[in-house]
Amino acid sequence: MDAIHRDEDGALLGYVGPVGGAWQALTVFGYPLAEAGPYEEAEERVRRDGLDRLADRWLFLEGGEWYRCVILEADATEVRVRPDDHRYPRDVYALTLERPGPGTFRPER
Image 1: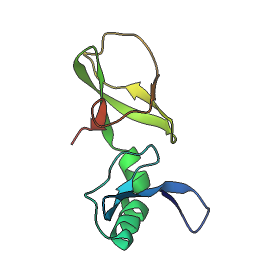
Image 2: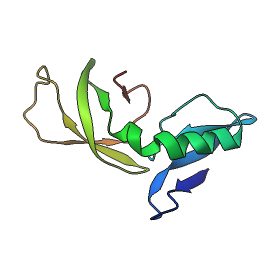
Image 3: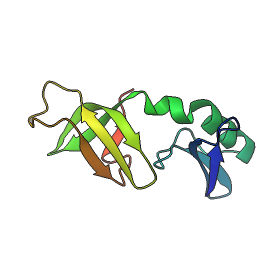
């Protein structure tokens, strides 16, 4: 897996990882940004959308229900989120999701 950094300041934008005979653009916590394809396209997608995708609203799964949230922090092993859903039953400011994947954490759109 190749880390993709912003040229100006070295900030981690995401990763490009092999999938079969193609390459997939991934967020900093490994969520797919697009379908797998040529390396250059995957790298461009990470550069264009890697950090912007973190600003989107996301959904996390808890107790069989999906709840809206916003990402506060993210790295390769965990994502810290703030629930932003009036239906969420717990009174917490933030939650840490360890190694979230598409089955438990996904973009709202």
